[in-house]
Image (cartoon, rainbow, N blue to C red; front, side):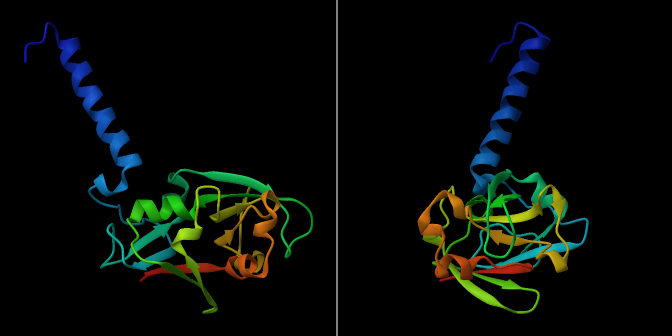
Amino acid sequence: MYFTSFRSVVSVVSAGVVLWAFSSAFHPAAAATLEAPKGEVLLTVTGNLQTTNADGAAAFDLEMLEALPKTEFSTTTVWTEGVQEFEGVSLQALSELLGVEGENLHATAVNDYGINIPTDSIAKDGPIVAYRMNGKTMSLRDKGPLWIVYPYDSSPDLRSEVIYSRSIWQLDRIEAQD
């Protein structure tokens, strides 16, 4: 290939880097590795995963979760008063990043309360792993540091006992299961 100037070479190299970054961001299986957490691990994902960073698991600190594509919405909940603003990563995006395979995500809280979320129910506009409520990180006392939250006000289907049971707070681990 013949280039007429240094600027042409830089443009081609830059375009290649952008395409690689774009493909890695939107096709997570193309990403070589998931970096190790530098801070306190808030979430550990195990089970049927294609992408890991810690002995067959994917461990995330807050900074890593914040670096993922962010989803925000406002909704009421049966556990809080008034409309709350939530910020986090969609469960679908997290599953895609890790190459989750299987029919269920078994989510477990700090107190060992666990629930199953069918992977076919985590659509794009579905639940998020919230790390902020009303612009603030959540403490254990405030249902944090992580809470699986649905946009309950967006559909009557999301205001059911099944969905409420999947809205696990104090989340600290998820296992992808068959």
